[in-house]
Image (tube, rainbow, N blue to C red; front, side, top):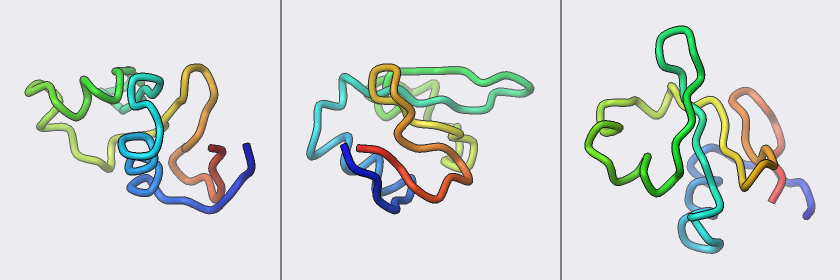
Length: 76
């Protein structure tokens, strides 16, 4: 897939509405560690509702990194 500029919101929107969200996972900061959750769990489970979007550090489609905090381009 080609590279294009993208924001976190664009990447999440693409994953949720134009692709299969079951293939995606979210990496987020939790204290001094990076934890991972499926995109579906991250968006729907109550325990994640208090995590601000600023703590998301990466989005992966299966094992491929598609968005990373501070990265200028993403893969689709």
